[in-house]
Image 1 (cartoon, rainbow, N blue to C red):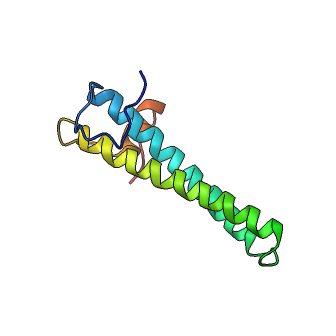
Image 2 (cartoon, helix red, strand yellow):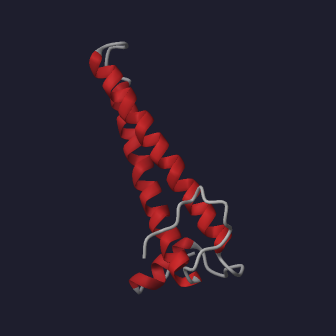
Length: 105
C-alpha cells in the first residue's frame, strides 16, 4: 500500500497500527543509515580544498541527503502521531520481536 504524503493535512490514514509500527521502524533504520552516510560525506568534504568543484559537489550531495533525513524524521513523527493508541514497545523492541531476538538491558 502506498504511504500517504506526510505533508497532508489529514491526521489519519487507513493503515493499521501494525503497518504504521513497521513503517516507523523502517524509517528509523533508513534514518540511521542516512545519518551515517551524512557523517561520512561531511568528513570527506572536510579534506577537500574549499570552493573547488569537488567541494561544491560534496556540499550539494550533503544538502540533498540532509533534506532526505529531514523528510524521514518528519514521516516517522507523522506516522507516530497516526498510531491510534500509545504503544508499549519501542522501535528496538519491535525490531527484536521481528528478528526473534530480545534486546539485553
